[in-house]
Length: 311
Image (cartoon, rainbow, N blue to C red):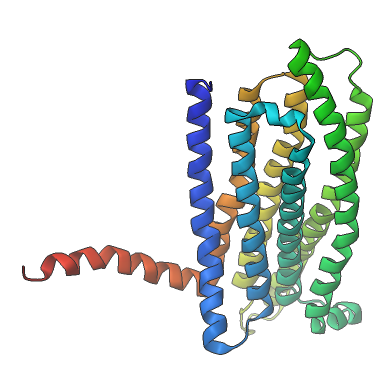
């Protein structure tokens, strides 16, 4: 039977899941309505929709993992659990790369460089995003191989633990560390792409401010756009670091601390990224922000209208 503390963490995880579903579901709903009305979506809206859908899948995987930890921990010794891991790996990979593509998209749309290579890529931003997504598929296949090998080691170790209540001294920590290194490498690529986009945005903003100082009469139209794009990319990088740390800690906690409660804390931390980032995206996008304000105004005013009706 789960303890009171485990039930509390499970309830909090469900709360994070509901919040994340509301934020990401709102993004999908607004863009789908816009698609029906205008028969097309902008590149940014397509990326946001793909990101929100992958985040919804990611939240479902985290919720399933939380229930398994609390209610049916013995299922970690069953090979069928690999299907849950594959579903989580796919959704996590797609969410990471859609967010990375969004960072790259903001960079090309907002930054201003005179280099011909930058201009050429800027005019082909749709192709750049598509190449990034297709290129990430090779890393996805590598990730699937990793998760298959790691799950084999994971389930075997858990069977030993379930049988003896202690970890076997022959557990291959070296093998686990090798998997960790490869996983870090896979996560490092989108992180570096987003970090590079942020640094180039800072450089572009500095050059823009310097040009304004040299030409006081010129109009300042892009400073705020630079700052908004930088905030969006910085928020992604910050939350991405928290998310990756929680993912890496999950395996380490399970291997070292031998407890469900510690792993539940880490799983709860993993919900922060897909749940909170959606609201940052809503606040940073003018169309989503206006729709959110309109929805809040309607929800706030509708009960008053109902009360004012005669009985």
